[in-house]
Image (cartoon, rainbow over all chains, first blue to last red; front, side, top):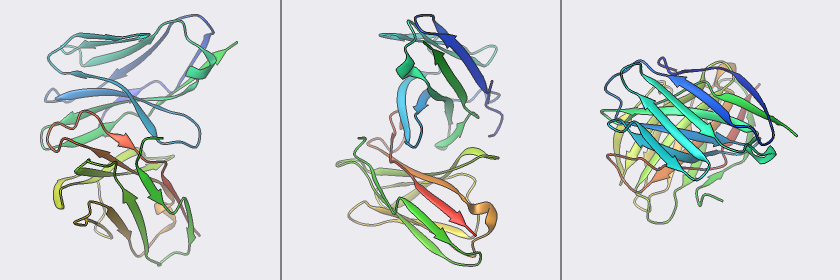
Length: 110
Length: 114
């Protein structure tokens, strides 16, 4: 909602890298987040980045932020079948307003 | 297990009725957030409470209300229910009230309005 957009589906082979993209429109975003949702479960925070950073790495996860283009990406290295899930990007704006993307369903093919 | 609990897990009710969803945050977390997840609207932020006070409001309908009690558990009240209110309702909690960069989500309550 509120103009946080993601592509709906992504399919990769096990062992390859996955890149999930997100675009947002509000330049006042303070933090940007990536969440993972497995079937029947709540959302799990994977990582976040402060809006004045451009990259963050956390084990297999790399977040890139292009603030000028309002583009956020999540790269998962060596993707495993357990990474199959829906991935949501989200942003927080001043006033503690949170907006989530539509989610990208990642399918990992063995 | 995130440490956030929600009850009930499933709820089926009729249009026009009122229901109450309950959330217990992680031990030590002062903030509680409510979200609605539906197929057509995606995940929508409804409201946030911090230490008993309303902190932020999102796309929450007037028919919906929430509160956070002194023991920090929270309830989301949904009234005059409509078919379109059928959704998954999540609560999340965090320690920080202002720059809540780490929210822990509960398993959700699935509401079906018939």
